[in-house]
Length: 156
Image 1: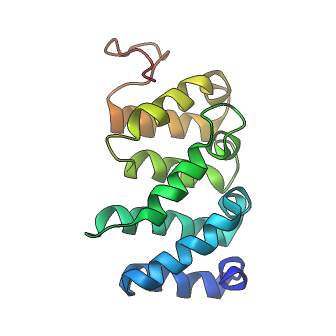
Image 2: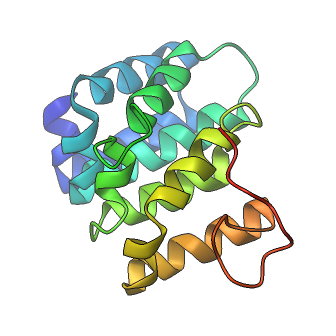
């Protein structure tokens, strides 16, 4: 699966499997991604499969502990060393960050918001970062520390 993740055509096949395959097939792909979350989040083709996994597992009914594991690995310890914080400004990883914001569950929202708040100065200085803050404002209605918010403070 790792070879397919990195291959332009293989990643297309894996995205189709995630979209139309069985839960067991999706879980196998997610397990492969979990072996090195940061590497796959920054890879051009693997990051597309990663995004599709987050999206599909959020939409499907059923139990997906692999999704929860991927999210936990992405959020890490919630500091600037967390994989999600490291991919925020990456040219491919920033799309994954936006998908994470869009697909996070209600119990994950405070951790995502807290991590974004910690990285806010860095996000405000780059075009990719501005896209992420806009996605967060659309999803959550505000961003801690952003001017013009509805008065929400960082939760954690």
